[in-house]
Length: 211
Image (cartoon, rainbow, N blue to C red; front, side):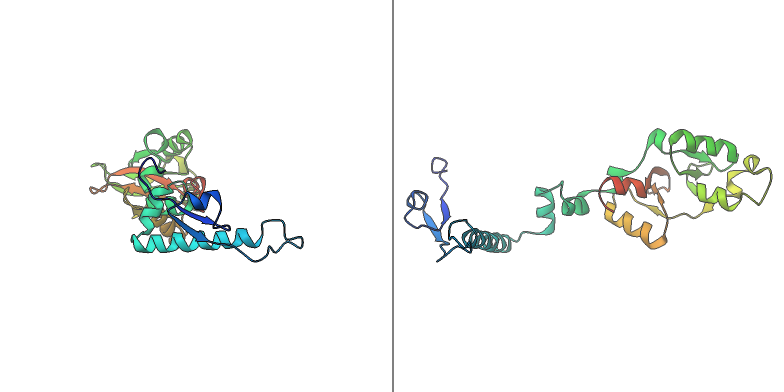
């Protein structure tokens, strides 16, 4: 530490210790007696050290204007880091894991696409590739008694129109809020042209430790 030109600030219960003698500044955290009945096990002294360390950390963060994002950047794997850094695009399902079908498709082919992707829903698009709706296993259950030839019907007759969507750059925490607020399990991720680019399932958030 001395070699790189940094000042050494120490905390010690003994201001005459070797550490204290080699430090530029020594913070005295000595205690009169340990809480241990034998006055041997470090108890009161460790508490004093912890309290002083916390006080220094809080003051330093305040003096430097340390914000939530700074904390998240330095601890990306922690809960706060995930909340403030992880975005929808980091978790959404794409490619083969995100079935996209035309609204003219038959229910049977949509079910096969969903099964192949191991997903719980499919994004339904119009002739221009823009999102027209979403078809979920819930939509299927709701129409089971509606028609005998269900699998031969057009998916546009059964899909949920105007589904809830989200931008890929939104925070994953915002996606969780939308899912909870509307009591749904999937969100279609769309770009500015309303083209589906991914699918976010509540299970993806569970795996990321959000729930």
